[in-house]
Image (tube, rainbow, N blue to C red):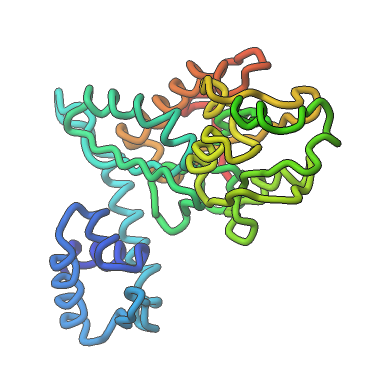
Length: 312
């Protein structure tokens, strides 16, 4: 049986669509379809049900998936044990899943430089306003707001970060002054869409004040930031995103500050891969260098390397 066909099967099972699987594999979607057809012909059974929204595993496909995942794990173990070729450098693909604002503002510029220094290494940065699932192998390294709860996962606390209440200077100039929490009454807010929140850690407005009016709600923290900067209203925003923006002013510093935590994790079986070690430690170092931006009021402390970890 062709291992490549099984690898394509696994990617489609995880991604759910030909296009997404093809993007992960670096091929055209017709190649994925052709590989799946060859595997189904070889096994003489349908592994996927073709639906309008994508591909869903059949019963036969669900039975096959854990077996192929075990093969993948064995392959990774062999890959980890193999000595690197002399002067080979870092090579292969590392996919990082993270929240949208953190990935865009704190990681993207630095990762671009890291990849430039390692031309055989490909970095995929999934900076998304939703959860990226390590268990579904959507990414190799995941940075999340919630601590991974289970599975053979290498996990470490990455950093804390601060969030504050912000509004634009233009908005404040045309609205009643805000000196205490009670003064928020009657003001317009910008926030997340409640029923589309991807983490309970984003429910900070409930801790502060239940707004009377929303000018804009968005799943995107970058969209919220731009709306507030344009004068749409008041919002709780990460300090690393809003703090450097001269268009914005921080409100109620004594009453409207929040702290959240980012966790970094990857499959325990991948920890010995040189490319995974290098990217993991680079992300840690990148965050350490920017702690003053992440948590302005705190004294930056030393971060943890790959050696400083725990398993969930």
